[in-house]
Length: 204
Image (cartoon, rainbow, N blue to C red; front, side, top):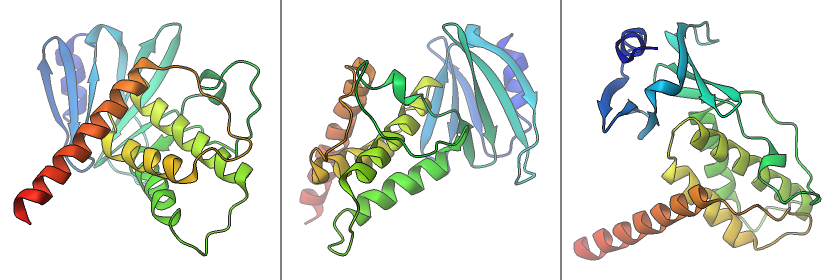
């Protein structure tokens, strides 16, 4: 598709900010504080779609190798496929995974990951180690799915990293494959935390 065709389609969605920067199409959603950065050549289609909220929505079909991934841009939110757990864990590794949605919205991902991060310090929380491991893996699938469609969910990843660090290594958690993109995201999480601490020190 031509860039103007994509921008014209996305103009139907109130609140979304679209621009081309360094050859990438950037779709910024202020309500989420995140931006999907996409290679325009990998966008195969941009069509209006129905969503349960009945708000304006446009689905982009994005080529990812041999796969085609949907990214639905709607009012104050974006919707995408979670990544498959088998793509994240080491081959042959044991993993338990709860039922996964076919689609997850960014706001739902943020809500669920943050809720676990906050609950993890609750002394009344009593989750079985394997259930906790499966939940952490499911949340990691959400994050990986967001990254596959060009999003960079630093704040959500920070909650995931916090919960994972607090839990340690519960029995049943699957060893995860090396992922340079994830390492880069974690580096940005660490930098965001450093800046937050520096800012708090300045005003204390």
